[in-house]
Length: 304
Image (tube, rainbow, N blue to C red; front, side, top):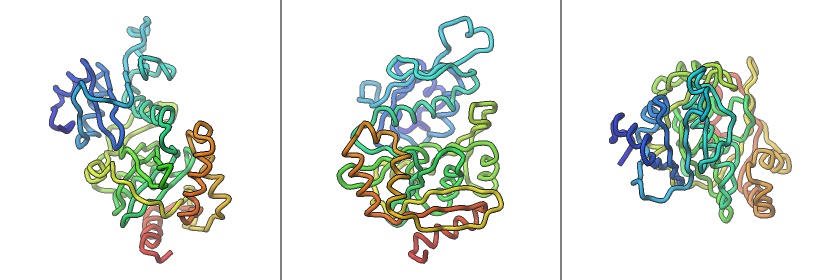
Protein backbone atom coordinates (compact mmCIF):
# COMPACT_ATOMS: atom_id res chain seq x y z
CA UNK A 1 0.00 0.00 0.00
CA UNK A 2 1.13 3.55 -0.75
CA UNK A 3 0.56 6.71 1.27
CA UNK A 4 -1.83 8.00 -1.40
CA UNK A 5 -4.06 4.94 -0.93
CA UNK A 6 -4.58 5.64 2.78
CA UNK A 7 -6.43 8.89 2.21
CA UNK A 8 -5.84 11.87 4.46
CA UNK A 9 -8.13 10.56 7.21
CA UNK A 10 -6.49 7.13 7.19
CA UNK A 11 -3.06 8.70 7.30
CA UNK A 12 -3.96 10.79 10.35
CA UNK A 13 -5.40 7.74 12.11
CA UNK A 14 -2.17 5.80 11.67
CA UNK A 15 -0.03 8.72 12.80
CA UNK A 16 -2.20 9.18 15.89
CA UNK A 17 -2.31 5.49 16.87
CA UNK A 18 0.48 2.90 16.45
CA UNK A 19 2.30 5.02 13.91
CA UNK A 20 2.83 5.21 10.17
CA UNK A 21 5.54 2.82 8.96
CA UNK A 22 6.94 4.75 6.00
CA UNK A 23 9.40 3.08 3.61
CA UNK A 24 12.02 5.33 2.00
CA UNK A 25 14.65 3.44 0.05
CA UNK A 26 16.34 0.88 2.33
CA UNK A 27 14.80 2.30 5.52
CA UNK A 28 11.45 2.04 7.29
CA UNK A 29 10.58 4.78 9.77
CA UNK A 30 7.77 4.63 12.29
CA UNK A 31 6.27 8.13 12.60
CA UNK A 32 3.79 9.16 15.26
CA UNK A 33 2.19 12.59 15.61
CA UNK A 34 -1.19 14.23 16.20
CA UNK A 35 0.00 17.54 14.75
CA UNK A 36 -2.03 18.27 11.56
CA UNK A 37 0.86 19.82 9.60
CA UNK A 38 2.85 16.58 9.90
CA UNK A 39 0.05 14.62 8.24
CA UNK A 40 -0.38 17.33 5.62
CA UNK A 41 3.33 17.30 4.77
CA UNK A 42 3.51 13.51 4.46
CA UNK A 43 0.33 13.43 2.39
CA UNK A 44 1.71 16.06 0.02
CA UNK A 45 5.32 14.90 -0.31
CA UNK A 46 5.27 11.10 0.17
CA UNK A 47 2.21 9.90 -1.82
CA UNK A 48 4.23 7.32 -3.79
CA UNK A 49 6.03 5.76 -0.81
CA UNK A 50 5.07 2.36 0.51
CA UNK A 51 3.43 1.93 3.91
CA UNK A 52 4.18 -1.21 5.94
CA UNK A 53 1.90 -2.97 8.41
CA UNK A 54 2.00 -1.90 12.05
CA UNK A 55 3.63 -5.19 13.15
CA UNK A 56 6.46 -4.93 10.58
CA UNK A 57 10.12 -4.26 11.33
CA UNK A 58 11.24 -0.64 11.29
CA UNK A 59 14.69 0.98 11.43
CA UNK A 60 13.86 4.28 13.13
CA UNK A 61 11.20 5.36 15.62
CA UNK A 62 10.16 9.04 15.42
CA UNK A 63 7.55 11.07 17.25
CA UNK A 64 6.59 14.73 17.09
CA UNK A 65 4.47 16.13 19.91
CA UNK A 66 4.08 19.21 22.12
CA UNK A 67 6.50 19.39 25.06
CA UNK A 68 5.02 18.35 28.38
CA UNK A 69 4.92 21.85 29.81
CA UNK A 70 2.72 24.93 29.94
CA UNK A 71 4.11 25.90 26.52
CA UNK A 72 1.38 23.66 25.13
CA UNK A 73 -0.95 26.61 25.71
CA UNK A 74 1.26 29.67 25.20
CA UNK A 75 3.24 29.98 21.96
CA UNK A 76 2.91 26.22 21.31
CA UNK A 77 6.05 24.25 20.52
CA UNK A 78 6.98 20.86 19.11
CA UNK A 79 9.68 18.38 20.09
CA UNK A 80 11.19 15.53 18.04
CA UNK A 81 11.78 12.20 19.75
CA UNK A 82 13.83 9.27 18.48
CA UNK A 83 13.25 6.03 20.38
CA UNK A 84 11.24 8.07 22.91
CA UNK A 85 14.19 10.39 23.57
CA UNK A 86 14.12 14.11 22.81
CA UNK A 87 17.08 14.89 20.55
CA UNK A 88 16.50 18.54 19.54
CA UNK A 89 15.52 21.67 21.38
CA UNK A 90 11.81 22.53 21.03
CA UNK A 91 10.77 24.59 18.02
CA UNK A 92 7.63 26.63 17.32
CA UNK A 93 4.77 24.30 16.45
CA UNK A 94 4.40 25.66 12.91
CA UNK A 95 7.84 24.14 12.16
CA UNK A 96 6.70 20.58 12.94
CA UNK A 97 6.95 19.28 9.38
CA UNK A 98 10.47 20.59 8.65
CA UNK A 99 11.45 19.20 12.05
CA UNK A 100 10.30 15.76 10.89
CA UNK A 101 12.57 15.96 7.84
CA UNK A 102 15.51 17.16 9.93
CA UNK A 103 14.85 14.40 12.45
CA UNK A 104 14.76 11.69 9.80
CA UNK A 105 18.08 13.00 8.47
CA UNK A 106 19.48 12.86 12.01
CA UNK A 107 18.40 9.23 12.39
CA UNK A 108 20.31 8.20 9.26
CA UNK A 109 23.40 10.21 10.16
CA UNK A 110 23.44 8.95 13.77
CA UNK A 111 22.45 5.30 13.50
CA UNK A 112 23.52 3.83 10.15
CA UNK A 113 26.76 1.90 10.59
CA UNK A 114 26.66 -0.67 7.78
CA UNK A 115 27.29 1.96 5.09
CA UNK A 116 29.37 5.09 4.79
CA UNK A 117 26.95 8.05 5.05
CA UNK A 118 27.91 11.26 3.24
CA UNK A 119 26.30 14.68 3.62
CA UNK A 120 25.71 14.99 -0.10
CA UNK A 121 23.17 14.70 -2.87
CA UNK A 122 23.29 11.87 -5.37
CA UNK A 123 21.63 11.33 -8.74
CA UNK A 124 21.89 8.62 -11.39
CA UNK A 125 22.12 8.87 -15.16
CA UNK A 126 22.61 5.96 -17.57
CA UNK A 127 23.42 3.62 -14.70
CA UNK A 128 26.12 5.81 -13.14
CA UNK A 129 25.94 7.90 -9.98
CA UNK A 130 26.84 11.56 -9.49
CA UNK A 131 27.71 12.64 -5.94
CA UNK A 132 27.40 16.29 -4.84
CA UNK A 133 29.05 16.76 -1.42
CA UNK A 134 28.76 20.25 0.01
CA UNK A 135 28.12 22.22 3.20
CA UNK A 136 24.91 24.25 3.69
CA UNK A 137 24.67 27.34 1.50
CA UNK A 138 26.60 25.84 -1.41
CA UNK A 139 23.61 25.53 -3.74
CA UNK A 140 23.69 21.72 -3.55
CA UNK A 141 19.96 21.22 -3.05
CA UNK A 142 19.00 23.75 -5.73
CA UNK A 143 21.29 21.99 -8.20
CA UNK A 144 19.95 18.59 -7.10
CA UNK A 145 16.32 19.68 -7.60
CA UNK A 146 17.08 21.04 -11.06
CA UNK A 147 18.92 17.88 -12.14
CA UNK A 148 16.12 15.68 -10.76
CA UNK A 149 13.73 17.60 -13.02
CA UNK A 150 16.00 17.34 -16.08
CA UNK A 151 16.66 13.69 -16.77
CA UNK A 152 18.61 12.57 -13.70
CA UNK A 153 17.15 10.05 -11.23
CA UNK A 154 17.09 11.42 -7.70
CA UNK A 155 18.75 9.12 -5.20
CA UNK A 156 19.02 11.52 -2.26
CA UNK A 157 19.34 15.20 -1.47
CA UNK A 158 20.95 14.78 1.94
CA UNK A 159 22.24 11.30 2.85
CA UNK A 160 24.35 9.39 0.32
CA UNK A 161 24.78 5.73 1.28
CA UNK A 162 28.03 4.14 0.11
CA UNK A 163 28.33 0.33 0.23
CA UNK A 164 31.51 -0.53 2.14
CA UNK A 165 32.37 -3.51 -0.07
CA UNK A 166 31.52 -2.25 -3.58
CA UNK A 167 31.33 1.57 -3.24
CA UNK A 168 27.91 1.41 -4.90
CA UNK A 169 25.66 4.40 -4.22
CA UNK A 170 22.08 4.49 -2.97
CA UNK A 171 19.79 6.80 -1.05
CA UNK A 172 16.33 7.15 0.49
CA UNK A 173 14.88 9.32 -2.35
CA UNK A 174 13.08 11.63 0.08
CA UNK A 175 11.86 15.22 -0.55
CA UNK A 176 14.46 17.82 -1.53
CA UNK A 177 14.93 20.62 0.98
CA UNK A 178 14.86 24.13 -0.50
CA UNK A 179 15.63 27.33 1.37
CA UNK A 180 14.93 31.02 0.89
CA UNK A 181 15.49 32.28 -2.69
CA UNK A 182 16.00 28.76 -4.06
CA UNK A 183 12.29 27.97 -3.50
CA UNK A 184 11.11 30.36 -6.21
CA UNK A 185 14.15 29.63 -8.36
CA UNK A 186 13.11 25.97 -8.59
CA UNK A 187 9.43 26.80 -9.03
CA UNK A 188 10.35 29.02 -11.99
CA UNK A 189 12.99 26.74 -13.51
CA UNK A 190 11.18 23.41 -13.06
CA UNK A 191 7.59 23.88 -14.16
CA UNK A 192 6.52 20.40 -13.03
CA UNK A 193 8.16 20.58 -9.60
CA UNK A 194 5.76 19.95 -6.72
CA UNK A 195 6.90 22.20 -3.87
CA UNK A 196 4.90 22.39 -0.64
CA UNK A 197 3.92 25.54 1.26
CA UNK A 198 7.00 27.29 2.69
CA UNK A 199 7.55 27.50 6.44
CA UNK A 200 8.97 30.83 7.58
CA UNK A 201 11.27 31.95 10.39
CA UNK A 202 13.11 28.67 10.94
CA UNK A 203 16.77 28.54 11.97
CA UNK A 204 17.51 28.06 8.25
CA UNK A 205 15.21 30.87 7.11
CA UNK A 206 12.24 30.04 4.91
CA UNK A 207 12.09 26.31 4.13
CA UNK A 208 10.06 24.25 1.65
CA UNK A 209 10.36 20.75 0.23
CA UNK A 210 10.06 19.40 -3.30
CA UNK A 211 8.29 16.07 -3.80
CA UNK A 212 10.63 13.40 -5.25
CA UNK A 213 9.62 12.17 -8.73
CA UNK A 214 7.60 8.95 -8.65
CA UNK A 215 10.21 7.06 -10.67
CA UNK A 216 12.86 8.00 -8.10
CA UNK A 217 10.70 6.66 -5.26
CA UNK A 218 9.91 3.41 -7.07
CA UNK A 219 13.59 2.79 -7.86
CA UNK A 220 14.95 4.00 -4.52
CA UNK A 221 16.46 0.62 -3.61
CA UNK A 222 18.44 0.42 -6.86
CA UNK A 223 22.15 1.06 -6.41
CA UNK A 224 24.48 2.56 -8.99
CA UNK A 225 28.28 2.56 -9.34
CA UNK A 226 29.86 5.97 -8.68
CA UNK A 227 31.20 7.87 -11.67
CA UNK A 228 31.57 11.52 -10.62
CA UNK A 229 32.16 13.48 -7.41
CA UNK A 230 31.39 17.16 -7.92
CA UNK A 231 31.83 19.78 -5.19
CA UNK A 232 29.35 22.56 -6.10
CA UNK A 233 29.46 26.21 -5.13
CA UNK A 234 26.83 28.76 -6.04
CA UNK A 235 28.21 32.29 -6.54
CA UNK A 236 25.88 35.07 -7.77
CA UNK A 237 27.01 36.33 -11.18
CA UNK A 238 29.84 33.81 -11.49
CA UNK A 239 30.74 32.10 -14.74
CA UNK A 240 29.99 28.37 -14.98
CA UNK A 241 33.23 26.47 -14.36
CA UNK A 242 33.96 22.76 -13.94
CA UNK A 243 37.56 22.16 -12.86
CA UNK A 244 39.30 18.88 -12.07
CA UNK A 245 40.02 18.28 -8.40
CA UNK A 246 43.10 16.27 -7.41
CA UNK A 247 42.43 12.84 -5.86
CA UNK A 248 43.94 13.85 -2.51
CA UNK A 249 41.75 16.93 -2.30
CA UNK A 250 38.71 14.89 -3.31
CA UNK A 251 39.51 12.38 -0.54
CA UNK A 252 39.72 15.10 2.11
CA UNK A 253 36.54 16.76 0.82
CA UNK A 254 34.65 13.49 1.19
CA UNK A 255 36.05 12.91 4.68
CA UNK A 256 34.85 16.38 5.70
CA UNK A 257 31.35 15.47 4.53
CA UNK A 258 31.16 11.96 6.03
CA UNK A 259 28.75 11.71 8.97
CA UNK A 260 30.08 8.42 10.34
CA UNK A 261 33.75 8.50 9.32
CA UNK A 262 35.02 8.34 12.92
CA UNK A 263 32.58 5.58 13.89
CA UNK A 264 33.59 3.35 10.96
CA UNK A 265 37.31 3.99 11.36
CA UNK A 266 39.46 2.06 8.90
CA UNK A 267 36.46 0.84 6.94
CA UNK A 268 35.53 4.45 6.15
CA UNK A 269 39.11 5.28 5.14
CA UNK A 270 39.21 2.43 2.65
CA UNK A 271 35.67 3.10 1.40
CA UNK A 272 36.49 6.72 0.58
CA UNK A 273 39.76 5.69 -1.03
CA UNK A 274 37.87 3.20 -3.19
CA UNK A 275 35.29 5.86 -4.06
CA UNK A 276 38.00 8.30 -5.18
CA UNK A 277 39.68 5.59 -7.29
CA UNK A 278 36.43 4.86 -9.11
CA UNK A 279 35.39 8.44 -9.92
CA UNK A 280 36.38 11.69 -11.59
CA UNK A 281 36.34 14.60 -9.16
CA UNK A 282 35.61 18.24 -9.92
CA UNK A 283 35.00 21.63 -8.37
CA UNK A 284 31.94 23.28 -9.89
CA UNK A 285 31.03 26.97 -9.69
CA UNK A 286 27.74 28.22 -11.09
CA UNK A 287 25.19 31.01 -10.97
CA UNK A 288 22.82 30.04 -13.83
CA UNK A 289 20.91 26.77 -13.75
CA UNK A 290 20.49 26.49 -17.52
CA UNK A 291 24.27 26.52 -17.97
CA UNK A 292 24.65 24.08 -15.08
CA UNK A 293 22.24 21.63 -16.74
CA UNK A 294 24.21 21.84 -20.01
CA UNK A 295 27.46 21.16 -18.13
CA UNK A 296 26.09 18.04 -16.43
CA UNK A 297 24.53 16.86 -19.69
CA UNK A 298 27.98 17.02 -21.28
CA UNK A 299 29.49 15.22 -18.28
CA UNK A 300 26.96 12.39 -18.55
CA UNK A 301 27.54 12.06 -22.31
CA UNK A 302 31.31 11.98 -21.97
CA UNK A 303 31.81 15.36 -23.65
CA UNK A 304 33.24 17.00 -20.54
